[in-house]
Length: 242
Image (cartoon, rainbow, N blue to C red):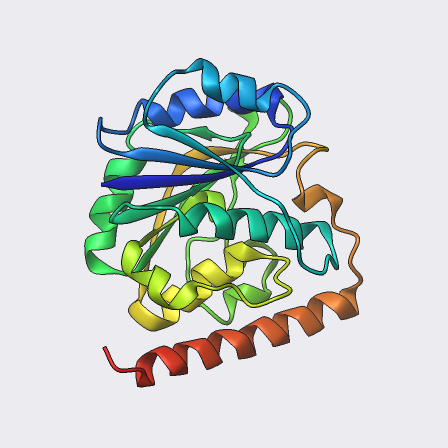
């Protein structure tokens, strides 16, 4: 069973195109879990208009300490994946576009690892013909974390449901859920990188990633903090009785 976990907030502009590309790759017993953070546009109306039992919508209400907009997004994704029932869990943004074959190729890769990361086409100007690849081909969990194109992008990831036993709950605060859900499973159970782009990653002014104004010092401190948290959680998992 596949669970696709999507976090939404005022995503009406591109939502239908994204949902269509996802549902086309899901079976009748799979699910699209949507956690919505109080959208005031037509996001919920669009989702309900499908009348598809595979689409399950939950309301999210952030109640923690907000240090940046990423904390809210991470909490929203945490809520979504906590509801997932599938054997394989995919993360999805509300504004991208999945390429045919993504689910099948990533599930195949997960037979040999805990988490899989695919490449993506970076879609910035509305013209698919001008897209460039988003990620470097090589993967190294610590080295690549500090490289501009070595980041983990949740929209490019999927992991086994087994990982929920140690990735939940998220540490607080957590501006980048992508890093936590990529780095920790990679260290615990290994990762596979698929260099083939399997989504169109749409970048525009409304992206959370484009709204970051954190200082360089903050970013370095955050990276060191999350790496320490990852290793602490990994050690706790390794030492815990199974």
